[in-house]
Length: 253
Image (tube, rainbow, N blue to C red; front, side, top):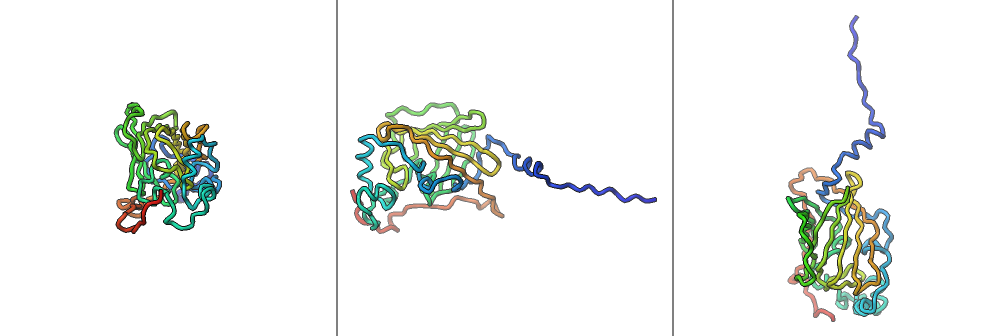
């Protein structure tokens, strides 16, 4: 009597699917990551969080100079509906700077890549990148030249990648609402890859010249961008402010 070969039926149970989802290296942050709106209040979509800490007298003075179409700064100075009245540095082709580039509506995709002794972070806006050094070096002292994207060093604590940065150019805003910062601002970022598809970020801004307490961001969730059919051509969208194409008026003070 001939026996039929046994058929083995493999069923993808929730447990096996979960196991597949967990097949990732928590210390590998490489990839293209897009900011999602998961868990964020409306005001926190384009800012560190929905509420900022109280400003110092110097911070309030700086904030009152802000002219933008968004939020309290617009209301405090009268409503600026005409673009030529805005003094947002980005409108005048200044680099967006960090950390604003993380949550600006036009730059929601970033790329992380691992080098031999650094993590590189790329943004389409300004075609900018950050060197996050992981070779044990220290941040420069306060008398170093300021940078639009600061100086950064990183280290691992368990499954969390911690980045500390300083020496930021104080001409940038923290968000589209005109939140100011000084050249004494320091930032700590904490990145954690919670599963294969998602990267979690919390960020703390410390600037005693502008704010009476550290400003801790809401939890930002980035989703891994799927590779296209031809990954050779996967790239960041380009966002360049070209003055020759802008026909700007005289910059308001």
